[in-house]
Amino acid sequence: MPQSVIEREMPGAGSLGADQLKGASQGSCTVLKELGPEIQWVHSYVTDDKIYCVYRAPSEALIRQHAETAGFPANSIAQVRAVIDPTTAE
Image (cartoon, rainbow, N blue to C red):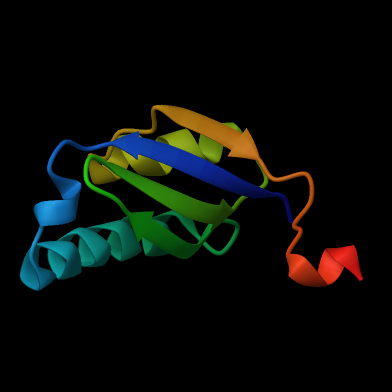
C-alpha cells in the first residue's frame, strides 16, 4: 500500500502537553476506525510549528478525508517513493 508523508502546519505544536497529544491521537484513531482498514497511521514527528505524519493509504483523497473529519490540517501530502538510511550506502 502506498505510504505518504503529511505536513500539518500547527503553530505551537511543539508546546502541546502529553494530554493534548493523547487527545489528538485518540481523535485521529477514532476517525481511522470509522474509515476502515485501508488507511493506517504509522507515526508522526512533532516539531515547533508542524507535525509530519506518515500514513499508509491507497489515495490522497482518503488521507484528506481523514484530515477533514478529524479536524487536522493537511497542508501537503507527498507519496514516499523510496526509503533510504545509512545501510543504503553499503
